[in-house]
Length: 238
Image (cartoon, rainbow, N blue to C red):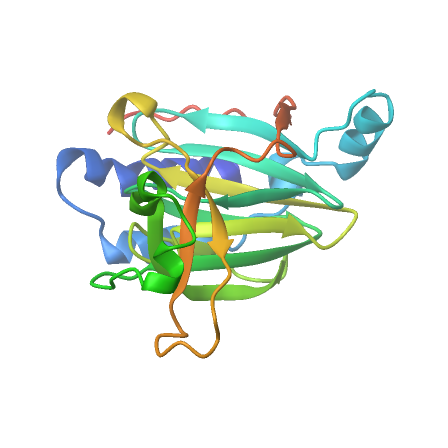
């Protein structure tokens, strides 16, 4: 009999395989996937925070974030991010991708933004950057800014909504299961780009608009990897 995480992964495969065939996402299937994802717990993926804590105690240089790989194919990827106290996934994007995130341990703070179209760069913003950097500016609006725990429903991002986000731990450790479809892929122009929020004057007419500028990966951010201990995810392509 399939376990909850196996049933979830198979449903994710059926849901997101439609992107590869050009059919587009089915809202009904996506709602069903989110409903099933909301039920996933740390026990379902055999996540034990004590294992990470003991491992970090014996490690000379503790990574601010650990990643547990669960599954990846052309259709979607699934894994667990473990964010330590003081650690964060810096503000980054998901080009042309859909994503679902479910906290299974601790408390996360998530700040997300959606890109806004048809907005010219104000002169006071433009003059802060050399000409070569100005094409890296993006106008966005705040989508979410709040705390999320395992008692909350999963969060969703789409190519147009909440596609830029920053995730930090508000507890000694926090962990979440992450589904991305399609996965990051350098050869298909789906790189992970990092951003910084540009300070703006609150007196501007478009003060609901924020500006992001693309930057290099922050030097303080890096991940190590931990082996997945949960049920095998053997997904047949349908």
